[in-house]
Structure formats: structure tokens, C-alpha cells
Image (cartoon, rainbow over all chains, first blue to last red; front, top):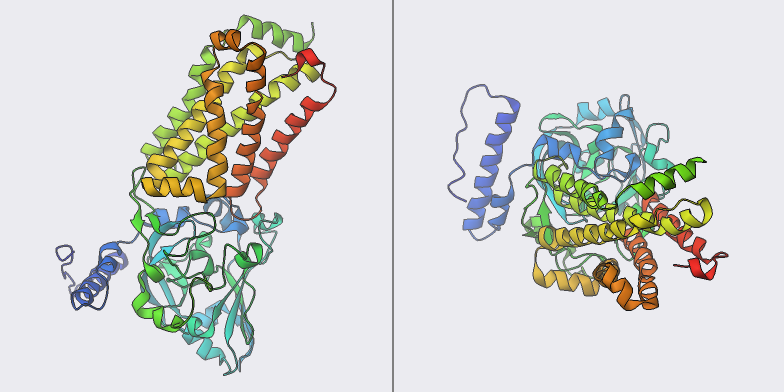
Length: 300
Length: 201
């Protein structure tokens, strides 16, 4: 896709979204360059066209607000995100209840344009704003004995109509191995397209792990725990044969009820063609190393 | 004359054929919405789901006709053929959207039918509807005689398969598919209880 990229960065004032587009072109160009050098895949340059705000904020899986894709956009406004406190505990040097604003004052927010692949075989490309989880964990002082990081979503029946139904065992919980949590690709997202992240996308802060199926990227986090035991994860608890702890995007390991070989990009309308799903969602160069020697069929 | 008799009298005067036209309007509406951006960011799944749900709703309606007559005295029997054929039309459209717009890849279509239990079950349910749709004409009713009634009991199996198909395809424990299944099983159970032989079916 050499023709699509042209460097039109200028030293003049630009609107935030235009700045974003410029940056994307830079990234796409850089990725294409890597591809030519034989290191990266060119597919990444071709697919990094972000979905528009409407798609990203209207088609969501957030079962705390209902199981329909449009339920979160319809009902999530009731979630009170200000004030917001994140409890950081477990094997950390500085446990405590951290106010969201205090966390933000300490963190450096940057833009990350990531592929997002749902286990249901649809995908998007999302321009997140957020900070690296590693920075937050460093701030909390994760101890050397910690092997996993556990996460928990808010569980508020008054504000979340979906938790009145036993679709899952509430609250929603997730977990990462420590090296996954510390990986530079792993972020806590607090915005999309430079705006505050909407409630339906997991306000005020959510995990984004771009090489894993979307359900690993837990939303509206109220608790982060460093632990030496593999923490329980919601979908694994609900159906262990279908959802593993790792849940890395892997076109060769099918979900029990459907194939994961292909995916459909959201936003293309009624006649969207399926496209091949990439190993680790296209982030194999960055993350394949941390799973070296592991049987990914067994540890799905 | 009670309200039920009034409805029965009105139903007697009403022809059944407009049901076919009214019945396919929602399908046309769904396709129109899908083509014009009215079904949200992912219109293929929305269309597929919408058509499948309509098929299931119409199946429930078909199954309700006999109990309604037996227990409420409401006689809508003359509309059953039209509603039954609409079940087939919606199930066929649902399958078609799945084949052409959703899965797309022929090799994967067959793999899904064989390997994915919820697809196998849904597809089997559809296959059962085919002979029913083909014999839903006066000639077949005359020709098959008592066998026609036996054959059309496949509706019960198809309905149960449709219910299982829905429960099995969703993630987690969801209320809606379970509610459909409960209604379908309830309507089937009503047929077992104290039915005079001549009214069975």
C-alpha cells in the first residue's frame, strides 16, 4: 500500500483528529517499511484504517448493560464514573485506593492504533488513548514474587441493568500473566479518538491487550491485584472448554462453536468480505516470544 | 355473542391470502434497513438474527393455533397454512443470509454444518421444514390423507430444534432463547393433555 501513505505532516495547527490521521499514516508507513525489510507483515499496513467513532461506540459487548450489541450504547449512561477509585492490592509495595484523577496525573497518555478482534469473529481498528499498564504497575511497586495481575469490573446493580441477570458470575474478572501485563503493547485505555472513553467502551479506564480476544480487555476497572496464583477469569468460569485463560487470537485454534480462521471488519455494510485472522491478531513479532515453547493448542 | 365468537366470526369472513403479503413485509423491511445502514455497525448478523427470530416467533404462533382452539375456543385454523409457510420463508432467508453474506466461504459452510452442533441442529430443523412446505397445498392434503397429519407433526421436532439452536448459539446464559424454548415446550405439552383423538394435530 505504498501509494496510500504520504507524509503530509506540517508545522501548523491541526485539529486533534487530523493530528491522529497524520500519525496513523506515519505508523502505516513505518509498518510498511518494516514489511519491506522482511521483518513485519505488510498486512498490518493495509488494515490499520480506524473504524469511525460511531461504529466503535455503538457496537459493543458489555453484558453488564445487556447482551444486545446496542444495549451498552443505550444503557451505559447510567454508570457513574466520576468520582472513580481503583483499588490496587495484593503483592504490591504501595497498595491503596487510587482516585482516577490521581492516576491520570501520574501517567503519560499516548495514542495507540490497535486492531481489536472479538472472539465472535468480528473486528475493528480502534485509535485508543491510554497509558502503559506497566507504568501503573511500576507506580504501585509490584513485588518480585507476583506472577499474575487480576482485574475486576465494577458491579453495580443500580447502574448496570445487565448484572441483574446471571449471564455471567458477576463481577466480571480477568487476568494476565505478569509478562503479558508488563508488555509495552498492553495499555489501560482512557480515551478514543482523543476524547474521554465513553461508558459503553469501559469508562473511565479499561484494559486493552490487542493480541488477545476482546473479552480479555476488561472494562471499567475498579480493582487490580498482583498475585502469585493464576486468577479466575469470567468467561473461563462460564465455559472452560470454550474460553481459555490465555485467549490469544489464534486462527488455527477454533472456538468450540465457531471457526476463528477468518473475521469480518465492522463498518463495511451488508456485503463485507471476510478476511484472514492473523496470528496474535497481527502482533506476532511483538508477543510470540513470550509464549515460546508453550503448546498454544492446550493453552488456548 | 362473546368476544371469542366475535373474533371467530371475523376470522371466518377474512381471507387468508393477505397474510402472505403482510407476513413478508418485515423481511423486506429488515433487508431495506440492512442495505441503508439502519441495522447498525454490523448489519449482516443483525439481519441474520432478525430473520431467525421471526421464524421462531411464527413457529410459536403455528404451535399456538391448536391449543387456542382447544382451550380458548379461538379458531384461527384457516390461517395456519399461511403462517406455516411464512415460517419456512423466514427460515430459508435466515439460512440464505448465513450462507451468502455471513460465512461466504463454501468449504467453511459445510465444515460448520458438520462440525458446529448449533449449526447442525439449525440446519436439520430447516431440512424438516422443507417437506412440510412442499406438502402445504390442498392436493397434498388429499393425496396423503391421514399420513399428511403424521408428516406435519415434524413441526414439533423443528420447533424444538429451533429452540435448541437459539440457546446454543448465544454466549453465556441468556434469558431470551430460554424464554422461547419454554414457550415452545409449553405449547407442545398442551397437546398431550386430554386431547380428544379427532382433534389431535
